[in-house]
Image (cartoon, rainbow, N blue to C red):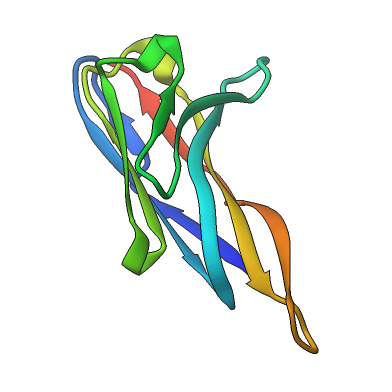
Length: 124
């Protein structure tokens, strides 16, 4: 079983910063990609940023220049550094990973795994 555990959400004023972390655990062979999505009230879940094992990244246009995604492959952990936060960044942020995991009885399988979500509130 593979789990993603997120941390780092909270309340921050506009212009402030937060750092989200997401650690994967379980019988993992590899993870590619790892990323963050968010869902604001009344809106669909959207991609915020994604990073591949090569280091290649994708960002939503709305966060380019303000958010930075990074990963520690040895720790199976992905980070999202969020700077210059805006009211519209308020959302539940979900970690997502494409995981090659061990299969019971041998072999491997590909799983798309989601974290439980962490709330980021930008408010004055």
